[in-house]
Image 1 (cartoon, helix red, strand yellow):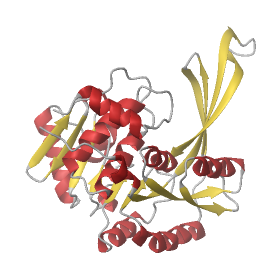
Image 2 (image 1 turned 30 degrees about the vertical axis):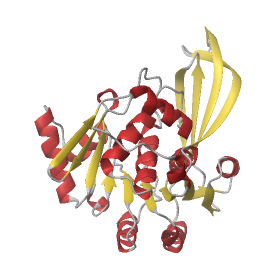
Image 3 (image 1 turned 60 degrees about the vertical axis):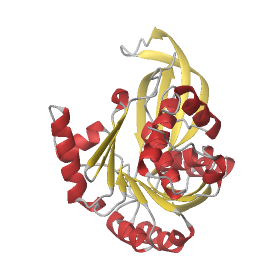
Image 4 (image 1 turned 180 degrees about the vertical axis):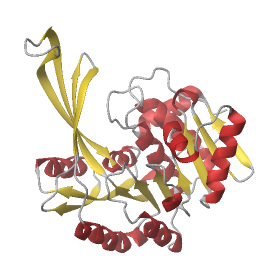
Length: 320
């Protein structure tokens, strides 16, 4: 099969609105050479700190890295993590609409690593209040018409509490709407263009399967029940599968070496949204998203794939 070759100019002219839960990923890198005398735990001597944008913010970063125009809508607190996220968005050229909740805290994930192995992760998070959610809804409706496609990035932190109305508004405006789902209740995603669950997420929503035919049946039943145009299942080392009416397409993984899968789902939905917003069909979009995912899993932590890396990945693998 011959796939459409992505053009940088296609992506540069495409505007994507990303809405969802954002977080700051903080990494402490250090060395471990002894065990604590206080408890049988390693002592990490920290030598370097890094900050990266996570969740919906990482989706926006991936869109910007691929050359697209990204805007981000979410709720943050009035704290250092929020200021850092806004600065990271500015650095990547992302239009941020981060609504500040005075009494809330920005979601923060702190990871301690030694020799590139994670020792522990500490999470700090709060759900947004009702006033912040109402403000999200108003801002979303005001922004929607300016964009070619919408991505809803659900990490279960509360920003997408009104997801059903968001889907309805996007459909009424004729905008493709892609969702990275969370939890077992997928009925709230009814009417979306595309859902992108991974294997664990699909199993939570549709139940376990024992062979490929049963998986296909469960995926197609879910797609039909939710009135989706397509369901894209990301399958880690097994690549990804795209389920549509009367059609299932598979793509093998492009990763030569899997180093870290964190954030790979953000890359997949970012590439899919950018392609659909630019007018690419679902098959071509999946091919491109699969190549982008192969790039990011070879990197540590929440990472992005830029257009040159995507172009090289597609060229190296050929265009069968």
